[in-house]
Image (cartoon, rainbow, N blue to C red):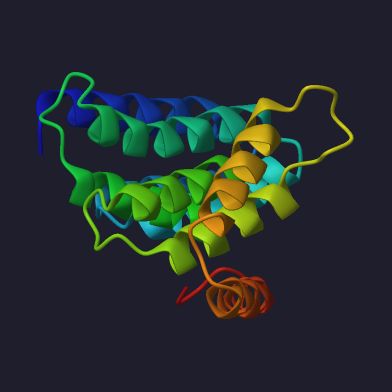
Length: 178
């Protein structure tokens, strides 16, 4: 594991320990999962805390999602699309619209995966649905809609219908196995 990633994860674990007094049981479980390298479990537990308004858990969850960006753009680490996909997928499965958009973007360009407009459309569609359009100038929502629409220009009607069906199925399965 590279130094930047190790430092980021150590900071997250340190923050878990600092906030452990307020919510000892859930955060101690997070500490254990992090020490075992079970980051999928860490993300799930953090999401539960974040949904309950725990600001520290919200920030830590955001840091985990940022790890995908680090690898995608090669920020301080060697650019690694496969590693970026892993982290984006983990975040997308937790319902993160930005990560869902990034997966769609990577499928649209074939970055780390075979180029697939159907899957790109599916993830962009899911991301668009998960971004509140009521927020004025919601950049992420605009990006998701833009990606979805640009994919449609290159797809057949059958491919669009398939992507929409996959998006419904993926959403119904809470983003697992998409």
